[in-house]
Each structure stands twice: as C-alpha cells, then as structure tokens.
Image (tube, rainbow, N blue to C red):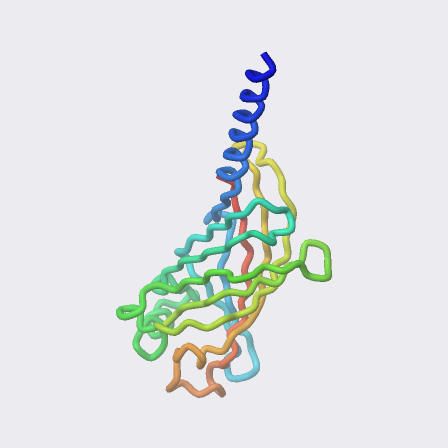
Length: 194
C-alpha cells in the first residue's frame, strides 16, 4: 500500500511539473498591444510609428523572470506611420529594404530585476536589415490578472529603450538633421498565458 502511495505521489508530482512547464508560455494579444517607436524629425519633433504585424512569446517559470526567454518576430512590411507615401518610402531600399529584409527579430539573452517595483532590464539580440546588435530595454510589468471572460492569466509590460538606426545600416543616405539617428522604442504588450 505504501509503495502504491509513493508511486501515486511521484506521478502526481510529475504531472504538476509538466503542468507548470506547459503553462509558462505567454503570447502577445495583438488586439491589446502596440509595438511602437519615435524618431526625431528635423531635430525638433517626435515622429511616431508602429509595426502592425508581430508576435511575442515569453517562456519561463519564475516570477522574477530570471529564467524567462523573450522572442519577438515582426514584419517590416507592416510599418505604419499614418501616411501611405511615407510608409512606402520607409519600406524602400532607402530605409528597411523590405524586399530583401522582410522580417526583424529580437531574442533576449538575459533578464535582470531592476530597482523599482516590477522593473526589469532585458538584454537581447535585435536583428533587422541583415544586422544583429545587442540592445538593452527597460521592461515594467503591469501585473497579472485573470481575464473575466476567457479565464486565462494575462500580464502586461511597457517596454522602452533606444538604439541607433545607423548601427543597422538603415537610412544611411538620410541626414540626421532630417530624421534622427536614435530610435526610441515605446511599446505596450499584453501577454496571455497558454
């Protein structure tokens, strides 16, 4: 009888471990997320845009995100600045050259807890326009709730950071006095637990 109880306990423990492992996958809710950016125009104003087509996946089991992995894949063709002519120019060989480089990706290499509540520093490899560079982003976790309709767990992150477009060979013929070199990432992501 004792042997059966031990086997049952081991089996239950294995099931729980499997459940934790499979429930630690979070994916972006496109309807409640925005992958945005700002760049200076003429050195005086913020020029805003976003990418409409992308997917974010986060895996991990620890609340402090120390074992988490974040992966993002986006379509450069989905750039949206609210102006079709400008979007067409940004998709051209002058900037993103989407015919050659239709996708961009980000893969985290480390996630460290920050000083403030819910703050993290996310370091990872950003690949766009055929170039890969390490970038740092600040992530602020908005909390975790149970969605009242789907009953699934939902978490949210605000991501901010910056990088230079020149480091990726984007818009090299466009002077910084017209379009700023520094691209500021300003994104709000909702992730749903699978």
